[in-house]
Length: 166
Image (cartoon, rainbow, N blue to C red):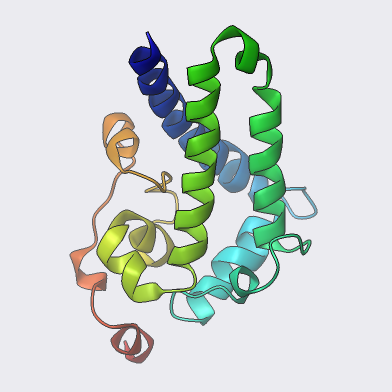
């Protein structure tokens, strides 16, 4: 039963990555003045201007910038699932572990562009591909493939210096 709960948490958390990133950050985030507007206004802009790096991810996690807001959102999502700590502890542990994994991967991908290109190519493609409304998942690309939002751009890969020169 524990493995089933962990597997369910993995599937659910990956689906939530897609839902939050697509519907909240991209659909609602396009509206100027909206709470999620920081995702495009700060994070996507800074990532493109800095060859994949986002200076917000070098600062304290608790600053109220793109990284801090994302961290707050992850903590809020884990807190919303606290009832599962009693009802299905392994499911809750899986949700919490996926939030930690997401935080680690996203922070590292915007502090180390080479690591991002090699380990999370779909995230690199999300930021630099022709269609920013693709490749919404971060920790894995299987859900994007499942729902048809995975787009590959092999021409994007090279060193960060080559990316700047292009």
